[in-house]
Image (cartoon, rainbow, N blue to C red; front, side, top):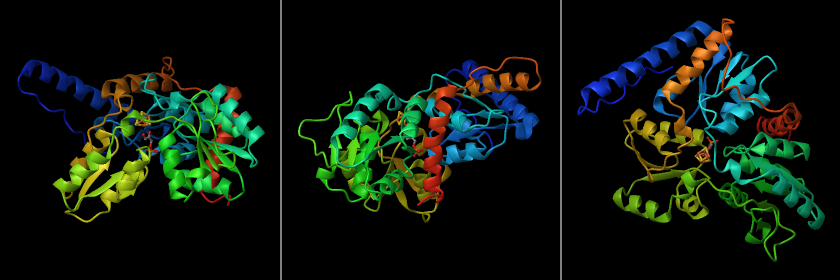
Length: 374
Ligand code: 13P
Ligand code: SF4
C-alpha cells in the first residue's frame, strides 16, 4: 500500500475544501483501520484505471488478466473489487463458495461489454457452424457479461484478455478451427494482424449476429462490431502531432485502439504491458500513451525521471465511479458483517446456472496462458 496523496487545495473556497479534505482523511483512516483489522480476511484488487486514492489501497494492481489470476489464488474471505462490473463478476466466478466479492459501485459497467447479447451471439454461432467449412470456436473478451463467458464455455470456447488474445486465438487456428471473436472489433483486427492473417481471412459480423453480404465463408476470424469509446477516440492525427512536438517520442497504445492507430504506434499491449514498458525504460525517455487518462496521469506522476504524456485525454467514466467514499462505505459493511453485526451490501453474484460454464471459459484461458495446454 502506497502513502496517501492528499486532494489538491483549490484555495478560492477554503471552508469547503477544508471540510472535504477532512472527510477524505476520515475515509482514508477508516479504510486503513478496517483493512488492518481484517488482515488476511480481505483483499482489494484494483485495475490500473482506478483513481489514485483507490490504487493506494490495492493489494493487487494489474490488467484484467493479472487481476483474474490473482483473485483465483487468494484465500481471503472478502474480495473488494475496485474496477468495473465484468471484472468483479469474473472474480466472483473464480471465487470459492466461502468467498464473497463486493464492488464499491455496482453501477460501474462497461459499454463495450453491453454491445453483445448471448441471443445474438447464439445466432452468429449457429449460422457460422452451419455455413463454414471449419469448426467454429467462440472466444469472448474479458470485457463481457458472465452470461457471454458461459455461452463460450458451454461451446468449448474461452475468454481472452488484451494480454493474451493472440495466443488464445492462435491456439485454435493451429487446430484448424475458426474463431467467433467478440465483442471488441479493434482488438480482433489487431490480433488478426499480429497473427499475420490476410484481409480475406477476417469477416465482420452485424450487431444482430448476421453476416455482411458476400462474407468469406473460409474466414479464420469472425469479428463482432463492438468497441470502447475511451480508445476509439485516438487518431493518427494525435500521433502525428506528438511526433512533431517530441522527435524522440515513443508511442504506446492499448490494442482496443483502432487498427491504424496501433499500426502507427511503436508498441501496443495490455495496461500491465504499458506500465511495465514505461517503468523499465531508461530515464529521460519520452512516452505518449494511448489509453485511459487516470492511468496515464498516474504514470506521469510516478515516473518523474521520464516524460509521460497522454496521446489525448480520454477518461473511462465507469472506472472513475469508484471513489474513496464508496470504498469506505463497503469497507464499513464488510467490517460489520465480519463481526456478525450486519448485512453486506454490493455483493456481486453470478447465477449458479452460469458459474460452471463461465468458470470453464476462464479456466481454459488460464490453462492456455499458464502453459497447462499447448
Ligand atoms: P487490460 O486487460 O489491458 O487492463 O484492459 C482492460 C480494459 O478494460 C481496457 O479498456
Ligand atoms: Fe470498458 Fe473502455 Fe472503460 Fe475499459 S476503458 S472498462 S473497455 S469503457
